[in-house]
Image 1 (cartoon, helix red, strand yellow):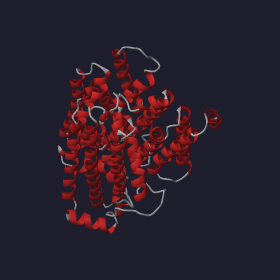
Image 2 (cartoon, helix red, strand yellow):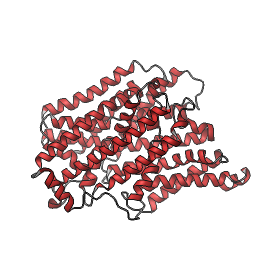
Image 3 (spheres, one colour):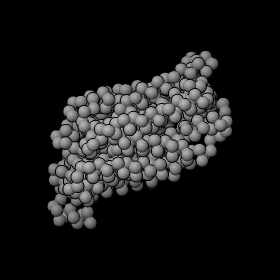
Image 4 (tube, helix red, strand yellow):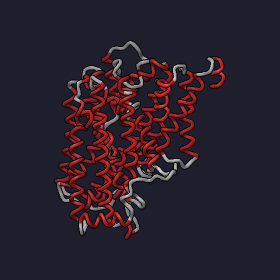
Length: 488
């Protein structure tokens, strides 16, 4: 990399901080800080949803899925489940978000099951999102550390990874701390354009560097089975089969896009359910096209590096960063690295702060002025950012795929939360105790499956949610005395 690349990269990071400062002047109330005054257009929300899903994990790990031994287009089976889940959310859940003015989605549970269930769901969200986005931060730090190593002409050192985590984490904290959710959404709109352009540019350069171009890449892909799409075999230990993708992907999307504050908060930034539905369904089509494009980049990387000849010297998560920092021309390399940072800047800190303040802190400190809650929200944004930095530093020597790790965490903790929402819709007799016990049983079931069986992560959300629904429904059908004895 050349000095021009560093100018582009750090200019982008400075621009992100400046954007947060620009939006800071509008953040006078918690409604503005968390929901942008409910005046964000639907198309911007749709772009924000796409940018949120297309994180650094996607940018780096999805090409690596096809690049690695045995990798193919089977990952798209999961995306088909994502599309089905979006349709279910649009029909069953989005209308309920607009029947009252919500600040977080977990406030619906307050009305149906009481404060304890709401607090448990909110706590699971805060935990899951902190861990998952710590993984996202780590992957971005790998790229910045690789940039530093390429500029200095050496190998990536552990100290460089830690320093990179701190730099990126601080930038993320600053623009979210000041700009609130409105800054997050509009920065994501810009980020969508940046990383689509960056990925397309990297693909063009890859094609130009492969002897024979696309014809060679296609021939190698066919020879090594890279174009296979459907895996109809029934094997619950494999994450990318048709059944795991369609069923598990549907339930995972119902949880992440239907009961997870990180994405539901974006719907609440508009004022009508039809706008939220348009944003969600449009984003699904764009995400399918994007994942296909990233897998094609993985095919090109496979044809360029020819790992079958050199013993797979680079892991799936490191091959794309290596190409970006070592083989792209000056200027373009900086643009693509900036695109990776753009994908990383889909900050969850505002959503974590919204949940922590509204669902956990406010019940303990009621009847305070809105200004007080706004100040607490900003400080909780800072705390959440520090926690994500801590997660990234703590897992920096992780060897498994970052995409696999992040989706595993999301699937484990989102299942019981989705389950309690479904319980509220399907069972009229289930009360607070039944719901709380159902969530506890769902969490215990999915953690047991994770620790004790080889079942793949796409099934975790289904297992956790269905256990919650079944246990909650059974306990709700009992008399109050019998239910208490059963729970005990």
